[in-house]
Every structure is written in structure tokens, then in C-alpha cells.
Length: 128
Image (cartoon, rainbow, N blue to C red; front, side):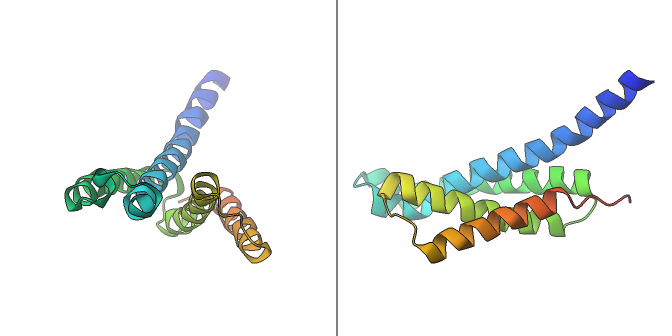
């Protein structure tokens, strides 16, 4: 009985982890899709074919993140707010690491608020 509960809990938690992983990967790809032409002089980042091709892949990542999140939470609002928070955090980190734009105090506070949004949504589990 105890092993059954542990396995079920792991399967349920893995849906949340999959959703978070997919939303993070999708946001990293989105950063390159939209900021790549500023960050690099490579022609691939300036190509409309790159933008469209990557967009199709990223759409599937976002779609699956939404699916796993809905299966975990049973509602849509959580992934919307987690996606906003993860997008803000990923954008901030990628911009800082790759373009060396140091966040200002205002930006740092916004990043902390984005992390707070993510943590609030992760702990927002309702029994449906």
C-alpha cells in the first residue's frame, strides 16, 4: 500500500516537473528566436525560416507544458502564471549571461516577484 502511494505521488509530481522543464526549455528557445538576431551576427538567427521553424517546435513544447500542468493542477491558471514567471526569469538570466546586461535594482525586484509567482503556483494544488 505504501509503495503504491509513493509511486502514484512520483507519477503525479513528475507531471509538474515535466511542465516546468518544458516551459523552461521553450522559454530558452524563445529567447534565441526573438533576441538571436541582436545577440549573434549569424544569418540563421535573421532568417524568417528559422523563426517559423523554431516557432513550430516551441509551440509543441508550450502545448505539452500546458497539458502536463492541467493534468497536475486540474485548472489552466497555474500554467499561465508559471509560464509568465518562468519566462521572466529565463529572459532575465539569458540576457544577463549572454548579453552581459546587468539587471538593475528594479529588474532584480521584478525577477524576485516572478520567482514568488512561480512558487505560489507550484504550491496551489486543489482537489478536483
